[in-house]
Length: 354
Image 1 (cartoon, rainbow, N blue to C red):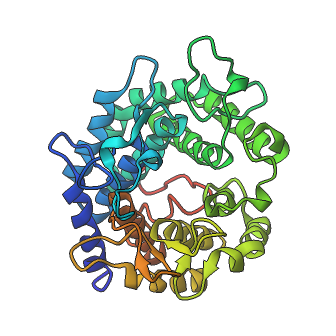
Image 2 (cartoon, rainbow, N blue to C red; image 1 turned 90 degrees about the horizontal axis):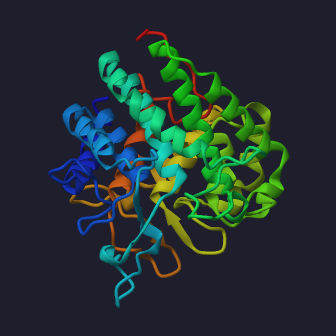
């Protein structure tokens, strides 16, 4: 812990720089807020020992929740780059209602409880957990997949795409909700059934999703998320990661965001580290963590990514969630907190807090 803590505090500093007075954690200094990345940053603050700041971040979710349970946010990917193709124009990010925005905070709340064991705090979050998942499951089709966004008025559910990686993430959040319910003595059968239906769709109905055959997807997340979510484990998970490891990983640099661009990114590399740990591959996980050291910014946090063809940091941004991913990967790699394995594959019930 002595050697690792300075790295964790270096990243926590960047997250705190992006946290606003009302508790919101922006992507970058200029803005962009979405509940998914906000929650990831709150989880990292909790891991780093900033309980009050993490609590303030979770409290924000209660204030922004809409009547149907949805948590609104902005699409950071919609923010264009400036004229120099270096910095994000945060003010131009568009608003949206994404189902994963509303599901992921449930996993964040379970993570926070794993760190501090405060059952009173967890009970105070339960209404939010229920209402978030009520909204999410209203977007679940009879086949089991969950649409990526809220339906518009008079729009049929079948007209809205379901995203494979988003559904893997939601699957894990549903499993977190089940564990929260068990800790608090609440009914969980409806969440168990919903999680089973999502898993069935992901495993047996690939045509229900936006990319019908994800084995050829250019996106790293589509490759490792089945393992990261815990939906695929054991030998099948090892085989899945081995199959495309050399395609996505640039030795000495990290994991590419997409196969066809020479752009290795800090966050994807950290998520891959945790997926590797889920299959017991600590050697490759540690190697990838070491490869990220050149992306560490002297001021605070980590650069978003490295463009190896031009040999530049790109874009010139240090997102809060990039710093958060590093903290959570370090925790997983070095087993620092009781929540170290929450993001590492299949969720397991906690023993010591119950």
